[in-house]
Image 1: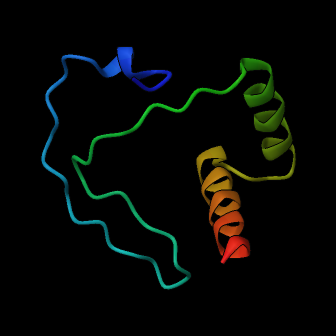
Image 2: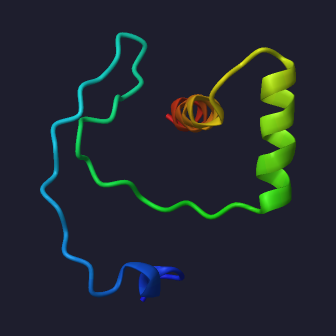
Length: 76
């Protein structure tokens, strides 16, 4: 059993939707695609959100996705 499996235990799995890649390699979420929970410290999220807003950005989610994709590419 995974660390957070108890949170999704008993939930029905939804149909997987097709995800279309962006030209730069990022993936966009198709309508209705189930989200996966991600657990981060509240203080970390708030600090990042404040910095993103200060720099004129709008989305922490895009920042996280970009960072994770860069990490994956670096491991190849």
